[in-house]
Length: 118
Image 1 (tube, rainbow, N blue to C red):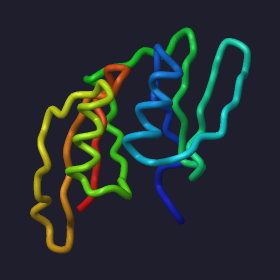
Image 2 (image 1 turned 30 degrees about the vertical axis):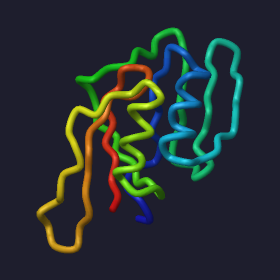
Image 3 (image 1 turned 90 degrees about the vertical axis):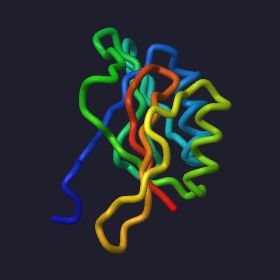
């Protein structure tokens, strides 16, 4: 098995705002798909998408998705706060050997998301 997680969808209520948030936070591009009632901004890595659909509701209390960031984690967290997100757990060292740091944020749509990096 190459990877365990096949696909992740992050709910959005303001599609353009969510795309802007993740573009700036993760420094990635998206492939846009419009399926009538559903819009998707697919990660260029093929691992998931930001999705807007009638029954998709952002939440801080559901599944936790964590992303690697190619920025320094401190820089990514500054970006989060500048563009409408909130840091709810500051940069924290992962105590397992050979691991970097993680932080928890609330994205522009109200989802709790994890970030990993240096």
